[in-house]
Length: 555
Image 1: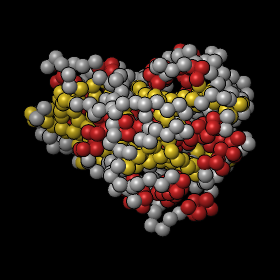
Image 2: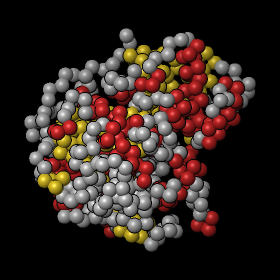
Image 3: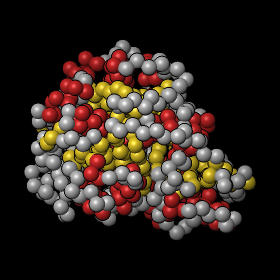
Image 4: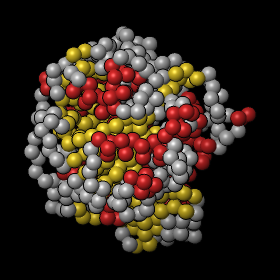
């Protein structure tokens, strides 16, 4: 297991972890009401950096996003210097990356500024991105691929994001109230949070003692009311552990009607309804790609302080079932905690952290075999290296032709964005081949892991067109959901009832060796019996590529 050896938080509440912890311990919140803002013609409440704060961190030659990430990482390295060589990896968690640079990835610039030579990875897995990044970093260390992993979570708000959540009717104009009977939506927030994972099993450190990612295969933007995904990740990370060891469960707690109810159902179904549970969105809002890291860091520091931070905004329980929401700061003597989180695309994650070190053997890289493969470009389709006759169809029309002639039975295809359509068609053809050869493997336990360079750039442009004219400002909720690249994973999981791990990773370029390493890391989770994985890029109707495979462990 990996050990956390240093951390930093930069937020509107403070520029260090201690400043942030002391602020929330005192009950302070960074949430402010905005009657309007540039490009946002409606009132909202959020936790945002001021223009002065952004300017304070701005570095010459770098965007605000890059500058904040670089500063937080440098502060963390100042606390705990580590070698920045081929044994150190940088993972960034972010749902929308850098609006100033879209669609180019900022990861390379951040890595270059820090002096890291290895290829950086961006985890773009909706709201669970931060916890997903921690899980990936821990696995890479357990596989001995790296000695250190720097994990940095960051997102900045913009008219794009705020108007998108408003279109979904998910925002509260007033301060959010997690799990409360009066809750009516979330607030958005800005922050950057960084921590360093190490192979060094320090006796006084915090250790990642369990982790899981599962898909509930229910809906791309609503959590399952039965909480199957939440239940599965909790049961996985709690295996072999006693609930009495937990000081607290730090929930996602977005203060939306359905998320909080789903998490409550998950805690009840796993027998954890009596464990103290808190949520920190009332202090920071939903910081998206930073949320999982920010809340993990603050929770471990609160337990070091023998304190459970109260759930700001919570007064009266507003979810069915009797769960134990911590209202006010409460003392604790326990030294373990559970972090749970969920996000669009049906993804759910949990991570168990403990101050009790344990010796885990080297996790050997799984030997994988390719069962079937497909390549789709604007000009051709090849399945298991055999070209399919596309009847002269090219570009975007090719995907519709393939659907009509070879699939036909899933009308939701026409509602998907182009990236999702590409992934859907490619996986449908792969699985048809799989059924023909009668080598189907444990489908319900199948993982779906995709990579690309440009995230959801095509869907981003479609959504931007709905908010570009202030006189004709009608953000499209249907278009906004698809601006998360991992929605394609969710669409495929829903179509097939897959409950394995789903994740989307962005790389500066197509790095086959790194992609294979991450695929092997995914297969360390024994629940994932097989995997659909590969490069999935859609930039324009004449520029896209799917190079996907179904892979399984060698017997």
